[in-house]
Image (cartoon, rainbow, N blue to C red; front, side, top):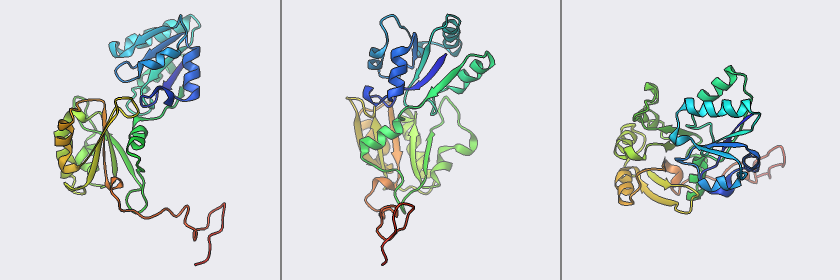
Length: 253
């Protein structure tokens, strides 16, 4: 059996209880060493086989899974954040399906949630934004033509940009090219959300590249953009005393 597990954004205590229990029971852990906090490996049994997938190819990862399955062992494939975002899990699952190897998927706390927590922010503020766009800048890995960053930026929605801090100048240019954001639109860079070395840099779209460089951030950071980082919004209807819900009747005005 193979268990895909989300490790959470970084802090070891942000892994789910189910994820922690699977790590404790595993005979083999294959972890994404470039991003997963190695402190989580402290949950492993003394005789657990541990592999760092940052040093492996897909074929090598699958070979380890096959070997463990043949021996009747339990494998945990430990991915950063939640495996559904930039986790490259589909290509593993497709092979496991084809070979009849059972697996399941345990979600984790994504770093985009960790970034919001670091900012004490709400991505979906009434009258400001009810949409969150999660994306990345095109680099060595291409993106579909219709998902170019400038095109997505044209919506003016809350945006969370993964895997792009090394392209910060191009990110800034694309955000402004979309036409909805201005140089004054609030932005932030969150480095290693929830880790002890977490750093939060608040800026604007116009100062995004310069602020990132000034703080020496070159990797392992998320870029967030949008007016949700500002001060203007309306209170929610959910807790408005005049708003009727399934659970309470609103007061007459």
